Amino acid sequence: MTDINAGMKKFFFLALLLSLLGCTSMEKKVDEHSSSWISRPLSELKQAMKSPDSYASKIDWDETTYPLANGYFIFVEPFSRECFIEWKINQRNIIMDLRNVVWVKGGMKPAKSGCGQRETGFP
Image (cartoon, rainbow, N blue to C red; front, side):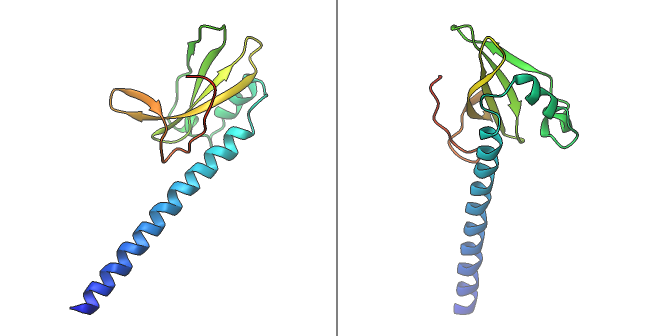
């Protein structure tokens, strides 16, 4: 009986460890991806999203934007099944900032986990 308990403890520990590594891996991928696009033209990001390797291309994503009160607008990029990046774009179509959001029942909300977390200046 103690061999079974010891085996179960090892199994749960390993499962927890793999789970934590998976979250860290996703956060790192989002951070690396997002930091490479700040201050670049939106047209370059749109072109990259057309690449067969991009998640947006794989799911045949329709361009999604919405305006902000200050003349800027948000451009939404799907990063993974539940993780989206909202890019803040200025009037000259330059990427200024971002926030990671997750899809939840009823819409999107700022990411708390699994997508990475980055504080930004826009709501």
